[in-house]
Image (cartoon, rainbow, N blue to C red; front, top):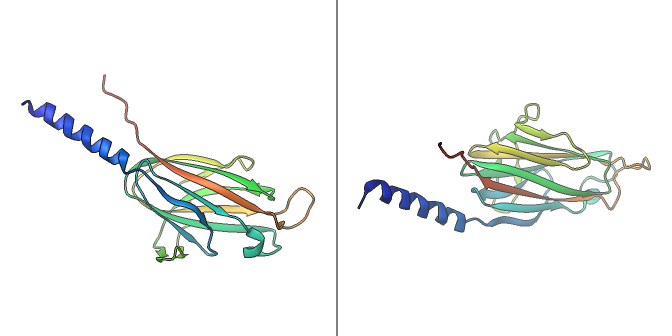
Length: 175
C-alpha cells in the first residue's frame, strides 16, 4: 500500500473523529458575579450562556461588567453573538487570560489586562465578534450600560443571552 495514501486516510479519519466530538460545552450557563467559567472547547464546540437578572446582581446602577472565562484546546475561528433586553449599550471584548483561577462550581477569580483586547465589537446594537484565535485560556468581557432611552438606570428586565462558537480553521487548498 502506498505510504502517501495511508497518511491521507489517517488524517481524514482523525478529522472526522474530531468533528464527532464537537459538543455544546456549556448550555444556558447563568452568570456568576465576578466571573464564570464556560469550559474547555475544541473546534466545532459551542456554548450558550446568559445573565438573566442583571438588576439582581448589580442593583440600580448605570452599568455592569461581566467576565466569562473559557479554554480553547485547538486553533479555531471564534464567533460571538448576543441578544440583549432592557439596556441601551452593550459591548464585547476578547482578552488573553493572565492567570485566572476557576473552580468546579463555575466561579472564577479573573485576571486579565482590560486595556489590550485581542478583538472587540464596535457595534453596540448588534454585538457580534468573529476572530481567529490560537489555543489557550481567554476572557470574554461584556460591559453594558443600563441607561436606557427613558433615562433610568438598569431596569429590572435587563438581561442578555449569548452564544460562542468555535469553527474549525479552513486553510486554502494548494494550487
